[in-house]
Structures are given as C-alpha cells and as structure tokens.
Amino acid sequence: MLDQNYLLKLTEEYGTPLYVYDGDEVVRRYQDLYRFITWPKLRIHYAMKANYNPGILRLLEQAGAGIDAVSPGDVIMALQAGFDKERIIYTANNMTDAEVAQVRDLGVLMNIDSISRLSKFGRAYPGSKVCLRFNPDVCDGDNVHTMTGGDLTKFGLLMESVEEVKVIVDKYNLSVVGLHEHTGSGLQRTESVYQSMKNLMAIASRDNFPDLCFLDFGGGFKVPYCANENRVDYAAMGAEITRLFEAYCHDYGSELEMYFEPGKYIVAEAGHLLTTVNTLKENRGRRIAGCDSGFPQLIRPVLYDAYHQIVNLSNPNGNPAAYDVCGNICETGDRFAEQRELPEIREGDVLSIENAGAYCYSMGGVYNLRPMPAEVVICQGRVNSARRRLSTEELINMIIGETTCE
Ligand SMILES: Cc1ncc(COP(=O)(O)O)c(C=O)c1O
Image 1 (cartoon, rainbow, N blue to C red):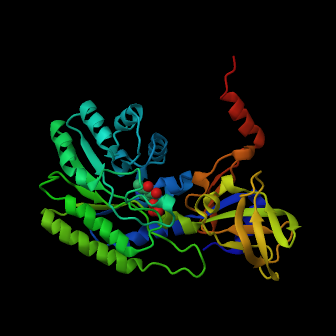
Image 2: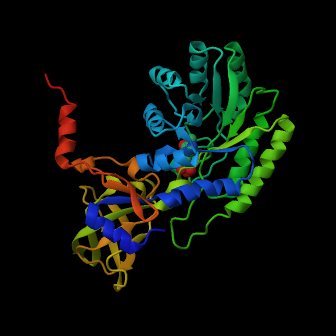
C-alpha cells in the first residue's frame, strides 16, 4: 500500500489530477491467483480493458501473464508491450469483417460469440482454430450494466444452440480449441462462479467438442470498494474451482488448461486518483467541495452508482463533516461522492479517490476538452513509469489536426 505522504509528494512533482498505481500490488495480485487456484495448467489472461497503462502492461508481461483483448487497439497495444500472440485471446463482440481479418492476420486466437459471426468466420477461414463464447445463464455482477450472463445480455452463444454451432463447425471444418464464458464484473456470490463453470462444463463434452485445449471462465472476481465490505475468501474459492475442474477433466479424458481473465482483481485496489479541491461553497446547508478532476476522468460513480472511498490526504485529522465531492464538468451529476463524511476539507487540500485502478482511466474521455490526468506507476518506492498529461494546446491541436474542412 502506498504511503499517504508519498502520494502527496508525487502531486508536488506531477501536479493534479494524477493517477498513481502501486505496481508491486498489481504483480502481487496476479501472483495471488496462482496460489488460490492450484490447477497446474492455469493461465491468467489480464483483462486489459480494466487498465491499459503501458507501465502496468509491462509489469504483467514480465510476470508471465496473458491478455484478454477486446479490440484491435487492445491487441496492438498488447503486442507492443511484449506479449506474444499465443498469450492473447480476442474476445470482442459485434466484430466487423475488417476487424476479424486484422486480428487474424496478427495471429491471435478469436473468441466468437454469435452464430452469425461463426458462419462468416467459417466461410472466410475454413479449417481454423477458434474459441466459442457461451452465455453461462447466470446473472451476477456489481451493477446491472456489468452482468453479462442471462436473458438481458448481448453477449455469448446460447447454451441451447450447441447443435446449431456444431453444424457450422463441421461444415467449415473448424477446430474448437476453447470454450469461454464470462458471468459479469464484481461477482457478488462465489456460487455464481461455480454455477457458470458447471453450465459451461456441461456442454464441453468430448462428444460436442473433441478438440478442446482449454476452458476459459472469464473474470469478475470482486474486491471490496467500501470500508465495511468483506473480502471474498479466494483461497476457499480457488480450492472449489480446482476441484470442479479436476472432476470435469477426468470426465473429458484429458487435463485441459484452465483460463481466467480478471481485470478488477488485479488492478482496482492498486490505483488512486489524486485531485485538488479548488473551490468550497454551500448550497443551503450542503457543503460542496469542487475538485480539479471530473467524471470523464473517473466515471464509475456516475455510470454505475459506484462507491469509491475518498481520503483527505492533506488534512487527515480535520473535524469530520458531510460533503458533496464534485468535479469541474458542466453537468449536475458530476459528483464523486454525495454527502460523504470526510475530515474537514480546505481549499488546496488533496483528495485521494481510492480503488481507482480498474475501469477508471481506461473508461475516461476528454468531455469539456479537459485532457486526461498524468499516470505514474510506483515499484519498490520509486516511479517505475510515468505517462504525462497532454497539454490543453496538444489536445486541441490533435482534434483540429484530425479535421478536414471543404
Ligand atoms: C469478457 C470479459 N472478460 C473479463 C472481464 C474482466 O472483468 P473483471 O474486471 O471484473 O475481472 C470482462 C469485463 O467486463 C469481460 O467482459
């Protein structure tokens, strides 16, 4: 865990808003999973959509991770970070033909999640290896928008379409080397993990898919966001996962590889967004602390109603009071926290928004033409990599440079 005074020191050097990541923690989390899930043929593919910071990718590459990529951009970025193509799986949805061709040309295994795409893929590339994504028919996640199983999702082939899938596979002589499911992000019940595994394993028989090399059970491992939230007993969960898979492999008749593709678990708790309060005001009794960041730079509270702890780094012992912690964007909903009890906030105080490592910077944008924050990755007490913030002029020049006018 990074020391609060050290975080403050970094703001003196890099300014705010600033993303800071604990690189040692990222690597520890990745390694944790191998301690929890003891299946000897386990492979962890980091879901880089959670955080594509080049410094973090480099650390995970060095630690031996694979990559779950969801766009050609992800694939190219992962290759540039040093991941070789065999360590990447491509799980996009609603792919275009051009995108499929591009990723295939890069030599990356495609994970296909619709009958329509499977037919087009088979026609274009008969005899290819492929992975198939199924809807696990389990609904779980920390928000309805992060649940990817069940009846309301756009993702995956239906379990009941296996016969139809097999006809297409046979017609084009495809080799189904993997099956995949992803239940959701921030899974609330360990039982959901087991049930999704069981549902996928039920169709992953040698009769249906004789060429399997791996089953991929997605990501979704939750981490606590609130102070009073329990941490999942991942050692117990890992033991049950291993037990279930061992029994499945015994029935299948060979020891397959087991893949997981977590994002949040690896990076969420390693990240902090540091922001300075520049304006204090009261709206009929509501204290408003206005910061130099805003929801385009950390959108989870607005998008998912997500709770992020906030620490007043520069006045930790101030008298507590309730604040709306707001950003600098022209939207009423631009709030990181509402009526949050915090040590007294003074203008100039630096706040740290916690658990800002996953789906924060990577979901960011430049709404209101404010450049995204700088990012630094810390390893063993030092800055291991830094990514600067674009200046406003650079951002504007980029946009103008991309525009052609008659
Ligand atoms: C297909 C797929 N795999 C893995 C993940 C990673 O999920 P998490 O970051 O919750 O582990 C996601 C995230 O939504 C996903 O859609």
